[in-house]
Image (cartoon, rainbow, N blue to C red; front, side, top):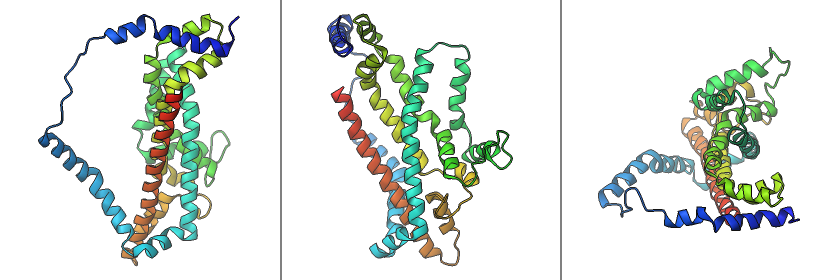
Length: 297
């Protein structure tokens, strides 16, 4: 009897050399031909992206260093600010990791499991996309506030912040993994099962390597959304310094300081720059990791 570990690779090789592979090799090219971008179209794209993304980001970074390097470091090293940054980054990473696991499970059940009410679940998943963030915060407050109907109060707690972030970032991993699952070639999995491979081995050796890039992309999107979240957290966090105050709340508070407008704006821009750099670093690192994992699989 072929072992589980040996069965999955053997099945994958058998299928890749079969009709599916021949269909891929013989598939005619369709659609519009690829052409080099013209100077006009490239210029329009560069100008549009510059106006919407590059110039605003450059302006924020420029404001962050209005007081020089010392002003930048002073702004982000203040005890309350440093605590808010650590909390924001930690909660965002936790939400991304949890979503990577649970979002994949939800997508798997929706695609592979046939059950009544699946259409309702599909609509429920997209609700956080449609809700304004302040409404999402009100939903969390209604359920986990002082008058909680289930007797659980999470106001002013880090657990409440994490649950809220999981709520608003729920769709990202599900909606990135789901299309990949729908397009997976089931022949390799069926062949592995016929050779005696167990379901966990089939998932780990055949399905997971193909899903990993989508899982990573969903985790990155969850992290990016969580790190800049404000509206859904402001009601349940209570903005307690050193406990539940997040970086976005610190930025908003700085911008409301009319007595020291210039200095406060510089400090707010410095905090925003840290969040921007953190998002960029995580995006690059996770993208590199996802490519390595997908190649290894």
